[in-house]
Image (cartoon, rainbow, N blue to C red; front, top):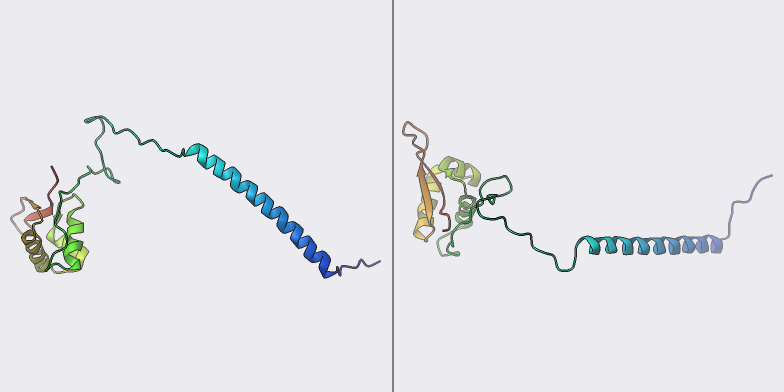
Length: 149
């Protein structure tokens, strides 16, 4: 005996609507459960974490480097291009960088970097210069934006 598998379309559509209603109810219930769990774990008024006492734990950046904030720097002025501000971004990272390294990051020649540094100084940026002690070739100085006090 062969079973008839041809169901009328109104029965199939009714079954689909019933399945959709069950799914909508289950999803709504799951959303409520997740929202309640999030509200429980994250209160409406989050409490800021207390800062460690000075001297206990040094405040560091993402990679454990001492956190260094640059002092207030001038805003965009005439005569400065996007590359100037890209150089400022690299110099404000807090680590001293050599001119060849900066040239590589910016895609410029070393001579251009020296020119850009002089433009930044002329526009009021406070640039720290440290000697590497290397006098027999290579670069002599390394640069960064001055730290704030």
